Length: 591
Image (tube, rainbow, N blue to C red):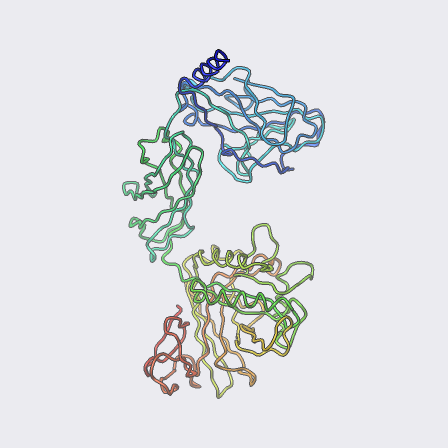
């Protein structure tokens, strides 16, 4: 027993002697997808199918003195495969520099040893292709792919067809294992970098969002980045990112700079971002540290207010729950000033508050006439892959995610609203005006339009299903200038639009709001209806002479801030319009 124990100890000591280590080369970062993708596969019988990745010389030569010992292949389907060969090549159609074969497979990762390890001598000029070919007896869609495009990450060859670069469609789940005792210790890859499509000269700050991955064995605690701009490479803007990344960890980061070299409106500017140094020392592979992104310079962007529309009726028993959810959201500081709420009484029968436009807007459901309530639209935005901007807010997160996404988007058209009540003529007169920072063809997919709504809060229900006691309707659309809006007529970079609404006897003036929006519209496409910006104001009691002539004499009380109906207003939450503060006229402008 003592001899056996000594032998085991000696073996363990021998097995741990030296500095042999391993790393994985590839673009999937250890991830695998076992869902079948029928865009990559064939129904043919007795054919070979192939896929590969390309590793540039800089990504391979850093491992000089080590060897590629095996290649692991992700398979999402095993049906009809009877042989799998892995290989290393200098060209996609070239001879195998190394290879290995298996005839027994599993769904998921399959490790295939090379017949002979492939030595890395540090002298590769362009790079190598690492890939596999499998023989199928009949239909198979076995290639495992991530729905994440990346350069050099997916080359594909169907039987009888040439190789094609499909990297824009995803990443191949394939990795080559490198073994040896001469591994690089510091190698941080800049995986991605983006900045908003538009940089505002008025705002003056620029945010960059990136992703980095640690591709060497030593943990990294932080790094420096540098930004240059095309035509002004001599000006360098730097930032430091503190972030811990162990081997194979991938994390997002962001930073803000104030680029004073951007001074005029211009399309197609290029920002180049580089990782310049790591906290632990110099990066051993600087070739994967730099990426560029393109953006346009504009003079300004505008405050973005998001339009939240709800489909609801008194016949809808689930509507009070969603209405209460929306009400609670509108009380939050992050939403109450920048989200505008209104309702359309349609989607689940109709009620006494339904107007013809409400019924017309069920077109947005785009479901062959199938409608429901409660339902919502956020800036009439349609999610990728969906066919309608309408969705059921089953949980609060669905609404907050959509609101946060839209609030983060810059607005390149302003919407200013003024409204007055002409009690003599029985009219509510509205002026909507604003500007744009980019050309019309950049703003709209189809046709830019203005829609103006007269909206009333505080309406007591007749009999609301699903509610106990008195139920109050808010945000009710009482009237609209035109159901599908009116086309914007630009004068250079500006527009101005006027309309009026009848002041009906059943309206409560102090509960009225005017909501205006600038949006996209295509009568043949419900998904092309994005609201670019919106705004609102309370109608004010003006003189019969119109919008501009409003005097403090219309308000009897003078302590604090009041709208011109005499209602006191929280000055920090004033909507664009005309108010009286301590007896003097005050204009809160939205444009």
